[in-house]
Image (cartoon, rainbow, N blue to C red; front, side, top):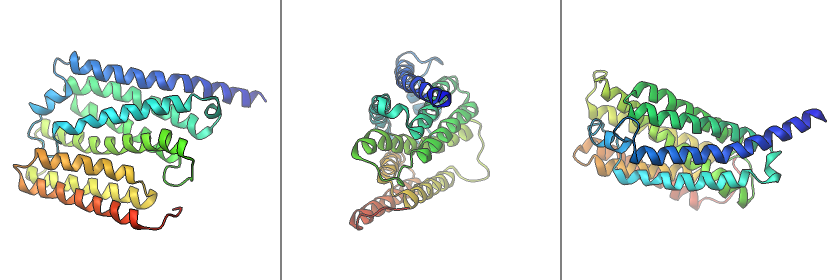
Length: 261
């Protein structure tokens, strides 16, 4: 009885802490654009110091953060309902999301202070936390109602997909900032990273049938193709990846609805 009460109390505490963490991350992210802690915000760094990183997407791609935060706020409202505070999967996802939010705040400071390799570590913590939350929620595996799909599964799908792309860009930026090429031309490195990203998206899709995850990659690859139009090999790689993923999405929509285990 005592253990059950402790679990319920723990779930309630996390349910309250989760929207606070989401709003704190949103506030820090917003303030970092107007009053960057390192003197230059993330976008300005991308357009100056890191402008030659071949996998950087066009600036418009980052409006997806608006979608991500709307989804996270929807999740914060969803998970604080009394019916969810005792749900083990939601409670664990809350804890992992809080870790991701703290790591994201740390990432903003590290990146704007040009501590690029430390920012990669923070990004990997965000990525790892979201992967475990994604798995714990059973996204693409468990049959759930519309409410849970829209307010829990979809926000985590979009957030994880974008962070997967962002991790690739972050690593490429750290390598570029440290003048490390590994003996490959920048265009070849970019193409390799695009292929890896496409492979990750396909693995997730064929295991989970998560169309939202693929759509984020298509959005990002389209923006990479736009920004890197002066580099044909990179542009072709980005367009090719986007077209392949779009083809998989269209193919999946033609398939009979079924539960994928």
